[in-house]
Amino acid sequence: DLFQADMAVSLRAKVENKDGEISLIADRVSTPSNNLLAATEIDAAHKIFIPRATPREKLESIGRLLRAHPGPDKVVVAISGPAGIQNKLLPYTVEWSSALEQEIKGLLAAPSGPLSHAPVA
Image 1 (cartoon, rainbow, N blue to C red):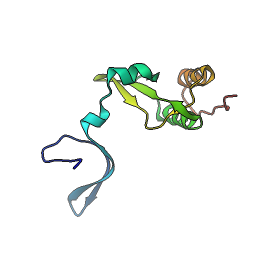
Image 2 (spheres, rainbow, N blue to C red):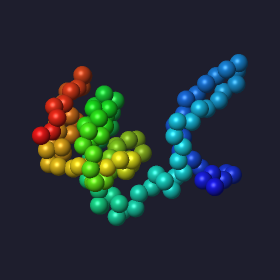
Image 3 (cartoon, rainbow, N blue to C red):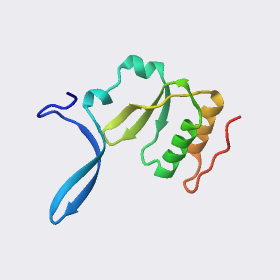
Image 4 (tube, rainbow, N blue to C red):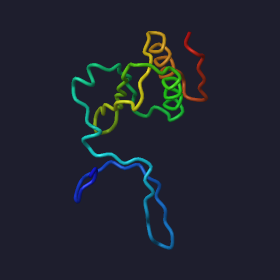
């Protein structure tokens, strides 16, 4: 069994309020052990540091860019937040290259607003 009584879980859900009764419709559920990364996993993966308050549009552009380059390489996203830096292993792998890394850095450095990116050659 994945879930047990009194177990902590991480949940991404939609909240609905019908007739004064609140319900959650789960999109993703995971246990804390699924969210923790061993130091060896972090060291073996390519890292992308996401500064605090990075606009959603930039994050979505980076996600599209990474998914457009499928391959064997693991990527850890280091997200800066009020509680410090959290390392998240992406659920997919990419074909990492210096050109891809530079394009990601360019997207993060670009002024906020509509983003587009040219394909990496």
